Length: 221
Image 1 (cartoon, helix red, strand yellow):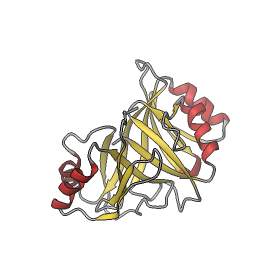
Image 2: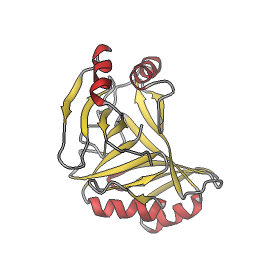
Image 3: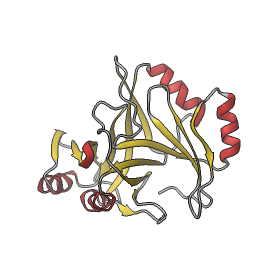
Image 4: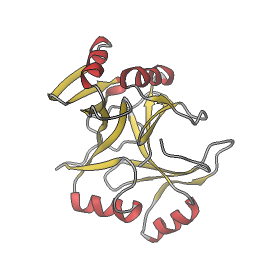
């Protein structure tokens, strides 16, 4: 898992917030608005989201930080909701109602790094099988943690965390394997102009939207 795509009302303001609040870096791919931290890119699309992470299949984005207290102080000054769960972990409700779960790791060499994404599913065994069958075991990149939900949650499409993304080397060959496994695609393969990659969208059985991209010369953050 290499990126998440957020729908935000002001892409530049959101980008600056992630840079200043968490200490992320500007993304090296300038064809999109985004930031990077070890393990994940965060891309911003300017539009009005239909809702936040609350009630969605994506519960939160997990980030490891080197100095939790400093991040919480910056968040409090900016007026964000903060809740410490222990001495070394906390939640911040970021703009567009995106819940961030922060865990302190003072051994880090960067200020922030991707840690996990929590996904609500109604069947833990089926979810692990669905993802590992399609993306490998272990699932590459940022860790996906599944949480049992007795009731279905709202799909992510159109919400503040619209989708998660995987980068693959040969998209056409990869799609052949997914089709053989019975995968249905929301949007078929398309080539985008300039530096933009070929891409495909699909939705997991519980409502999380997933983007697959082929980026020549791609390197993980």
